[in-house]
Image (cartoon, rainbow, N blue to C red; front, side, top):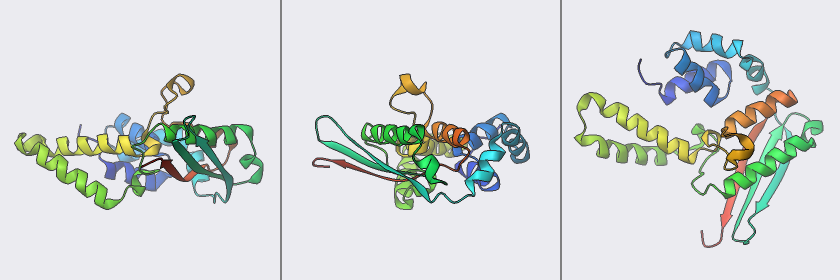
Length: 200
């Protein structure tokens, strides 16, 4: 089975609107077969989430977290479709927990893969290619792709496991976002964040 690439995941995501991690998992289970992965997502109820993903998320909340030492602070915007959900306790609590997570994850650079600056991705690809130069030619590309995946896992918010692993059972931010979308019946979008650190 060939390795699942970021392009494969993006293609499935474009077709279904399902979350990134859900797409990656479905592709892995389907052995890279796009049509089979779509069926898996539909069977898991991701199709409903996909339908909601097209709905405009024009309501929401901005929450903050300031670390107890006063040296790190985060603002995060979490959006949804209705004011009713925006005031929901679970929705607001998730936004607050997101801000706490970002405060504890200084490497976080972007919300999704698509938001990672292309120059950063190109730089990491160059570094990975140089590192892989002494590897056999037939595995070089896989090694480089593995390095890029590892880099994205570090810097992309949706890919990260929540820092409060006990509370969230090692789930990723994308899994938690998808569950909140499912629970509220609305499109839930992590719109943006800003992390401030003294001297940073």
